[in-house]
Length: 202
Image (cartoon, rainbow, N blue to C red; front, side):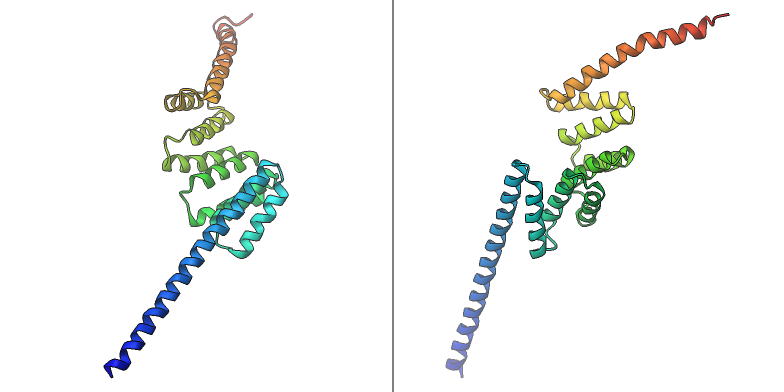
């Protein structure tokens, strides 16, 4: 009996080894496929071929419907094509699975801003800032939104924080210079209003 049991054990181990190898090959192939479609999408985006890029992403989602990376790319491409409502829906579906993904939160903030919803956009970017409080790209978005919401002091403070993190950030430098010019232009108007209040005519 012992002699007969031994080959069965060896056979069982061999089957497990084959299964492990097949799983490894499948995982490697899946990684290669993922890298391949993303490379193709980036190349097409670089050549401004958004329809072709979206077709590649949709094909990937047909093969792997739960691929959140592909869903994120679909949101970006829809947004760049001006399909903002569809992009917003796509981003929100991804965030339901990965609520702290800063790339998706930034994408959602951009779309909400383009849709004319700056307060909602600010909410999305605040969520991203909680995850990555010192990421300049997140802070730049926040500063832009604050400007749109007419919070000059908040935007100014945010741009200054960005320059502490990145002294050569040109957008922050230009924005602070623009805000300073706006302040200078407003000062005479404020003085005239104050004079009228202190010395009303008649």
